[in-house]
Image 1 (tube, rainbow, N blue to C red):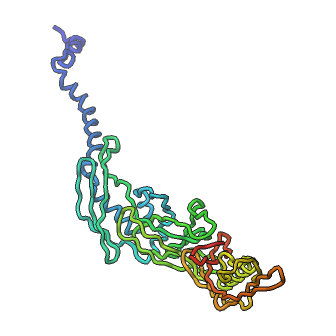
Image 2: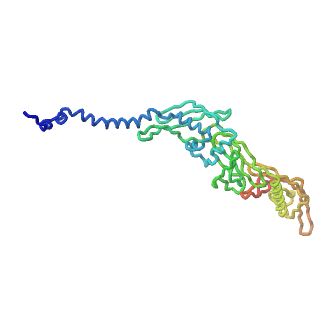
Length: 357
């Protein structure tokens, strides 16, 4: 029989009749399976190779930021200050200028309970060391919800400062920090309290310049190496009187004395002189010998002054033209305070210790 090429080419092949088709289908499926496996390796293998950052690693990073005065990192993990405290002084510039700040830490250990962990460390500032505890929570992130440890909000110490009402800022380590209007005292006189959230350290604190009459007094405040809302006692930031300030206080005392002389009462309220107790009739006052006035620097935004060695005379005139004259000493203590506009006002202390303006 002659060779028929068509018959040869039309004969069923093993691949066509299905008896040997399996190898071909396997070759088609393997590439898809390989791609899926590769994706799994790409997504999962980095987590396996790199590993999960431990609670100790996160705690170490935060504590190192404190030592480095990295306030941006600290703020990321800081709890909102309590009781209206301000974080306006928590800046790199203030911390780097500190007399001393936290300078060492040692991780002591960690306890993990499910998705919560506690890392205990010793934080050092000079020769002082305190134990601190950082709390962390594990969260799942990313496509495969890879777990990571995050610090719970961390509290920082609070510095309580009493500022004269005229102050609109405070100096921390020589750096002037403006106070928002709502944080300033709305009192007419005296001092207002400001609470400042800061990191452990030793700070030079003072009121700002207050005009030619006063010069600010610098106070040193120390915040221990603690990471909680530990709060200092109130620190009084005051001013000392300059020569011009002494002159202003003396002038104020003279004005107050002149106001007392205008009284017709034998016992003018809160004045450095009074008639004998048995005198009840009204009369006229006259200062025969002006007292010597001495201004003193004080605290809580006040400046005391004393009047010494003066002599006053109180004259009572009767209906028949007779006169009764009583000479008494002029001696007393008064106070001056600076208003928001940097003007001195004040009054005499009452005999029992009270104050009348």
